[in-house]
Image 1 (tube, one colour):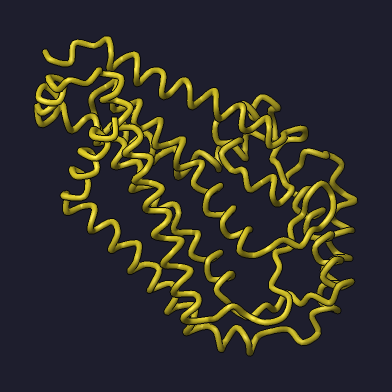
Image 2 (cartoon, helix red, strand yellow):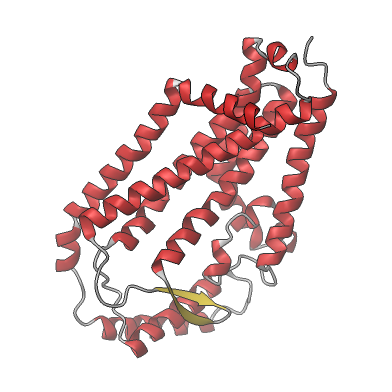
Length: 318
């Protein structure tokens, strides 16, 4: 199995596209860092010195708006409850929202590039099997002394490891550039999380690690689905197209449906954002971290199971 994975890694590394992907991540993080650094002075100038009074006014307005929302499952209600709790915590503990840019805030900003990591992982996952059929190299692969299940699993594991490698590069580059440009900050740099109806101060390092890893869950599931589709249909275009479409609109459609139907909680995209439990704002009442993990495991077994069964049974040598 390890030899098969090593062989797949060599194939990926030798492709010019892989170098382009890594370069794009580094360049975009650099561009983002330059933009944030350029606007840092403006941000400090626009900082509100009377932030306590501003938060008090905002909190009062939010409470009035909250009284008009009776539906406990309304996303707007949950957002207001979280906003009120965090604003009151800031006032009581003298934690200004005018936080100077530091390595942690920059890493939060650069986490928006995880969607790019997702795109690259989907492309690799969709191509890693379909390309063997397109190039006719699948026959050479199957004559080697390895079972079909080991061959398909080595390809799947390689594509997922590639995704984690891209995520690590993004995390590392963001961290190093953030330290170089902004430092670690001063004062209270804790992250204020809204959990189970109250506010908690969390380590920014731990929060950033959670943010990157948990944000990758959606990519992981979509990459698994793209791998399954490309294996079943032997077509990377279909796999990439479906996965990218779901990556871009899946969450939006799920949020809309969540406002009308409770069964939405069984949809894949209602469960991929595990950060909703860190921030205390699940889309549907009653959803828990355990529930979402179980739902994700079911989808994972279905996607990977179909890949294994189809690849093992189909006459791929024809």
